Length: 111
Image (tube, rainbow, N blue to C red; front, side, top):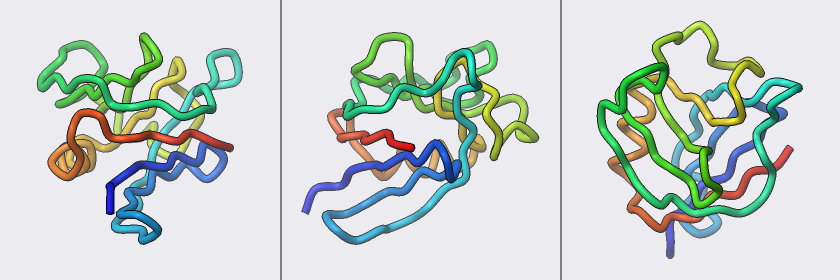
């Protein structure tokens, strides 16, 4: 079956699925009230290691422009609503997730 990602903004969790089976769940940070993480179905369109700035060790861009799944220089932010809409992960977690999913992977974001 195909791998896909679900993101729960209310639970601050990103789950990696293989078909109907959950493979792994990661803690995340999401958008704050003024810049919420957009709900919807997207795909991973690119991966960029060492993107610089606040994006930690890796950026995975989504098919919604300017939004992505990325690492962080501020691990204390994980579990909170603090980003400009992106999905933040611990650096070791975003590297692990990236190694498990190809470009084109479906990402479903919901409350």
